Image 1 (cartoon, rainbow, N blue to C red):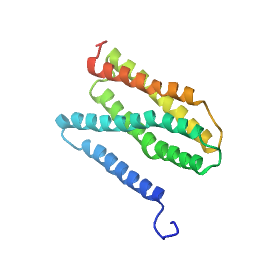
Image 2: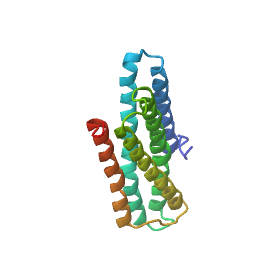
Image 3: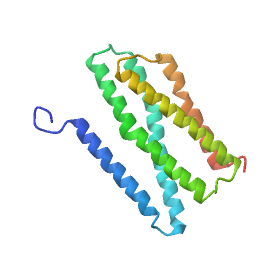
Image 4: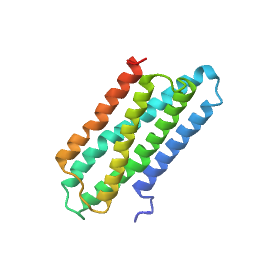
Length: 179
């Protein structure tokens, strides 16, 4: 609670995100009770929603690090960036990554039976995205303890990794160049 007796904005944001996540997961589990013909389309839709959310975080986090690097350690702005980075990671990115994996693996098992070189290459690229996520989580922890990690230039370059992996993944899924 703040001095006005109202919940802090972070508490409200976490509550809203938790409710959204619960609804999303409940919808996902409800799908397993749906008829088999429509289940794939619903799982695919939820997978795409989760991936878009995850990608948004993967593309935004390096920008936050760049802006954070410009702030003086201990300043109000630096403390604000710590909160923004932690919330982006824990409320959006990590749940979206987990849901992307859950729905993606369901499709890989149930629909594609782990068949096709395109699927194996896609999974390899998704592991690359997961690696970038883990590295950013490490950076959030470092920034959170006032350790500067990287430079503005290195984070601008690092920001290209999720973009390149996303392009590869989309081509593999849509074109399926390797059958």
